[in-house]
Image 1 (cartoon, helix red, strand yellow):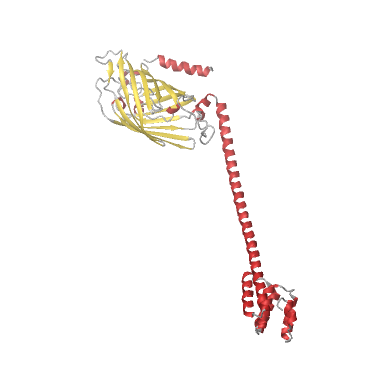
Image 2: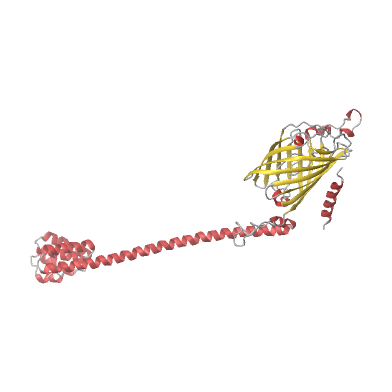
Length: 448
């Protein structure tokens, strides 16, 4: 154990042993605020939290309080407190506090509870000992928490009765049970962020303004400082003054307080059943209670570096996956294009075969001098394959036999355009111009 840790523990037990200004002592109730109830968003990570605090009104007027609280898995918060108030003199108050979450939606929460069920002993005031229910506090509170960059702020708005609404430094055996409204802000800064961040606290408890701060000296240990009834700070410790400046203790006298808060984190949850086959959320630490790392800052840094490396690796894997999907898409497009070309070639081959069959039939009709039937078959062949030069050559010969020299010449020219090396067509054109076309020439182009 280091010397610093030893001094902190010694200070804590010193505060505890001096439990000797009002019942609602600063930092003596569950939560992170000064005198008002609140909802702690960190309580669920702790097994229990211990507070010890002292409040000074003058050199001979002070009170010290001690409290311990815990939050159950079902949302019930239980706390006990031990306070030695200024009045009644020499008395000790043992209090019980209860709080329950009613609604939770994101960062929005509503709680209700009871505080200050007090058992008082050691007082010299008549009928003051025993169970005191006159200052019993019923309350309801609405809280929100927002984060931006490295800062966060929680807001607590509610109403309450009993000592929450009115808690005088002067003892009153019959306090009024009125309902009052309270409001508080807890602003967390990135200063000492590794220990949780420095908190600035401001609250209005229904009677006065309280300000304070919570300084995290360790991850689980905070030093709390505050000034209550800040608006009356000019009349602080009037009982220590002389002459005309002397005044007795006022019910709303300002006070200076300091204390210590120690949180014991949950190392594990024995009721939690871990499914080994179930993926652990978005990362390997999603089911790990990171509070165990707070005992060694080096471990925290290593885990953060590993977490960043895992995020970078995740981005790289995502980019590679997207690139692989693009390649698969291109491959699918190439396969589709190849299939189209293959189908086109197969279709062209089928058309070619059908065209040749029609040409064969046209040749048979031409031999039988059935020129009209031969012409129909040639036309069908050209429809199936418009680029077949021999089909146009044969249609020209059929038109010549039918006595249509103009169409015959036109089809022969088309055949030459498709096949310039079709030399027999040149002979047919020359013979047609000289009117000396003979059956021998027709045979050379496959028509007799």
